[in-house]
Image (cartoon, rainbow, N blue to C red; front, side, top):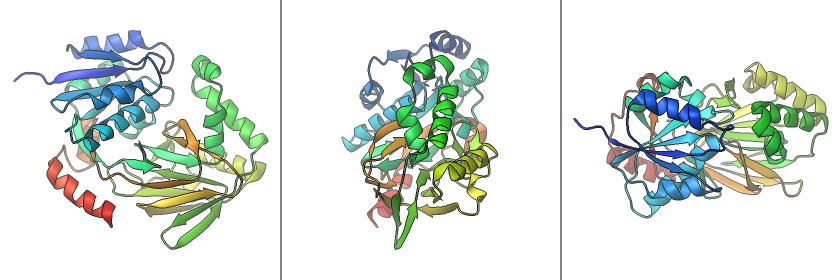
Length: 320
């Protein structure tokens, strides 16, 4: 039986210079790949849109590069094309999606996963028409992402986010958002709508969230100012943010968020992406995500349903 064709989209700037590590991974995998290197922001989206369904597509980069490729696959589906399964070669700063699916980041383990992946269906989130795998956030986390030094990020990786996050805690911005979920309205200073348990790496944001769920967990944080932000930050590092007495977690398929404090940034999958207001929902176009077999088994087995069976009810849900 012949090996499926493999295309790798490589972001050479993700997490520093990782070309040598990528070469080591592919050498362990022992396969020939079509390597497509990105040259500018948005390029991964352009490249992914052109990859057809008979291939396996892996993105060698960070969560931002994966987000671009995801949007490229949705572009292709909107144009009427079948799309390939999408996989992860984690070379970024936080690699939250890799953490979420339990992918070991050693070269041999990644190579084994490339050769023997499981597959799960994921219904991506959408915010103002842009898709996301993981989350969209507003408040202190979006301020941190919007203002982090790119130069410092290249030098010290996650440490750049920690430093900028501390600065935002000590000198907080005034944030006042209104979140509408069904008939309920919430007034908060911070909100994250997440499809994933993890945040910023291995920190647990919402323990019941799952990529394969047809819903998002909305984490609502009403507290503002130094003391509240410091408490939230400490709770997050202890994996207990969701358990704070003033924090609510609401599960939904659709929500809208408006700002009462003027233009406020939002972050999508760890990248700064525009400003409020926004509408968040789930995409009617599911994608196949290649994951370690253990994660696929945990989610109910490897690709047990075909695309047609998966797509029809999702389109019904989205239309309701």
